[in-house]
Image (cartoon, rainbow, N blue to C red; front, side):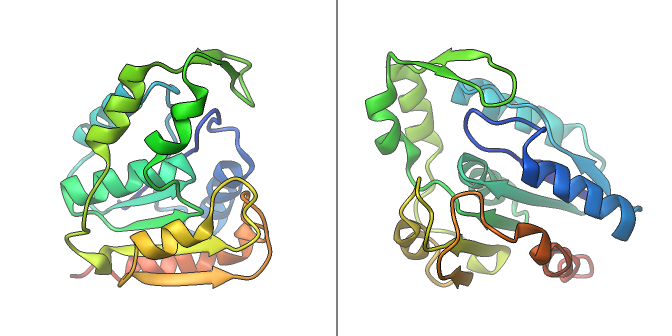
Length: 195
C-alpha cells in the first residue's frame, strides 16, 4: 500500500486546508493509499524526530512526501536522507535565516493556539538539517506561485534548479487552486512505483 505523508508548515497542523483537501481527494481517488499527516512541533528537533519515527514505523512500501512551506523543507531533508520522491508547495528555503528575527517571540499555532518560543538551538537544528546540493533532482517537483506573500519564490526556484518546476504567476503562500493539482501530484508519485 503506498503511503503519502503530508508535512504541514510552521505554526500549522493536520487541520490545514491543504492537508484536509489532500486527505479528502485521496479518499475518493486513491482509497488504497494510506494518508499520514502528523502534527509537528514548532521546535525543529521534535518535528524531525516525529517524522523519522513515522517513517521508521512504515512498512517498506512506496512512500511519498508532500510538503508545504516549512513542510517542504522537511520533505527535502527526508528525501535526501532516504531517497524518497517529494512534491514541494511554496517550500521554505534555509528557514533558519528567516527565523532569526523570531527568536524569543511568542508565536501562536494557527489551529491549536499552542504557544511556541523559538530559541537559538532551534535555529541550529534547522541549520544542521538544511540540505546542500540535491543528490537526485529527479525525486522532486517544485510548485510555487509568484504571489507568495510569505516567502520569495525565487529562492525555491534557485534551490531546486534542475528539478521539475511549476511556477505560476500570482497566487499566494497558500497556493491558490492547490486542489486542482492533486491528480497530477498523484501521477507524479505513481511514476516512482515501478522503478
